[in-house]
Every structure is written in C-alpha cells, then in structure tokens.
Length: 173
Ligand SMILES: [Zn+2]
Image 1 (spheres, rainbow, N blue to C red):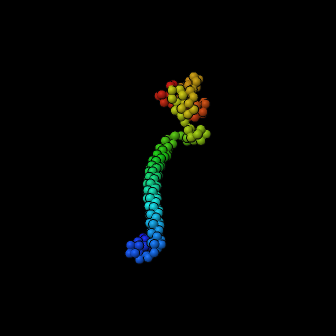
Image 2 (image 1 turned 180 degrees about the vertical axis):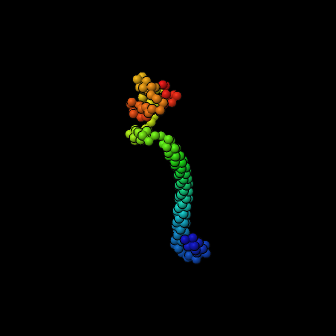
Image 3 (image 1 turned 90 degrees about the horizontal axis):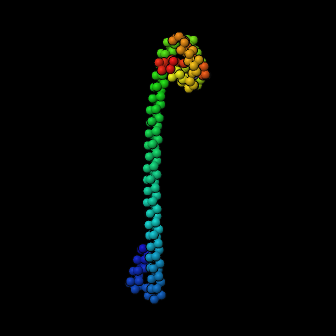
C-alpha cells in the first residue's frame, strides 16, 4: 500500500499524468491510501496493546497459581509432619499400655476393657476433689464414705457412670 502511494506520488510529481482529471484521481487515491494506512496502524496498535494486557494477565495468573501451589505444598508438609507425630505418639501409647496392662490383674483388665467400650473409650477416671472425672459428678457423702472405707487395693467404682475410680491424694477423701 505504501509502495502504491509512493508510485502515485511519483507519477504526480513527474507530471506523467497528463490531464487534470488524472491528477485529481491520483490525488484522491493518495489521500485514500494515507487514510487506510493510518487506520491499519491504529488496528496494529490496538492489537499490540491487547497482547500486552493479555501477557500481563497471564503473568498474574501464573504468579497466583505458583502461590497456591506453594501454599498447598506447605500444608501437605505440615500434614505429613503432624501424621508422623501422631503415629509416634500412638505407638508410644500402645507400648506404655502394654507395660501397664502387664501389671494389672486379668479380671480387673477385663472389667476395664468392658467399661472402656461401654463408656466412650474411658474405662477408669480419677477421683479428684470428690468428683468423678469421668462423668464430672460429685460423689455424695455416702459414696465418699464407702470409697474412704474401702481397702487401698480394692476396686472402687463411680455409682453414676460405673467407671473404675482411681484414688489419689487429691481425691478429697
Ligand atoms: Zn462417674
């Protein structure tokens, strides 16, 4: 298009166009070509601007994806660490339980296991300041008297939740 405009301009300048009508036509064509060129330049500019905007958007989305991936990886690592900790704690507890269970008479262990399955995983509770820590109820005077009177090695139980009561120096007896 530029070449054509230049060629027209050349013809115009050289005076090769003979008639005034030819001259007029050439001038009109030159103006029309210049206008089209300017329009096309506008289109090119707009396309470039849009491409730039899209590249920026792609970069922004890429950054966000990377940020989310980093957070996910971090959470994954924390989860793995927590699971490892729980596993270690669980196997430690299992070992401790085996040691304790080995020193408990068989019939008492049987009773404890039965209560544990009936009472949501807790078969024995501490008697703390006259209160059963299993069901959180305070023992009445009669019950406290019975516990107080029982031999140290006797198995005493909460009248309310039936759990085995573990007596300590803080039992409030
Ligand atoms: Zn209780």
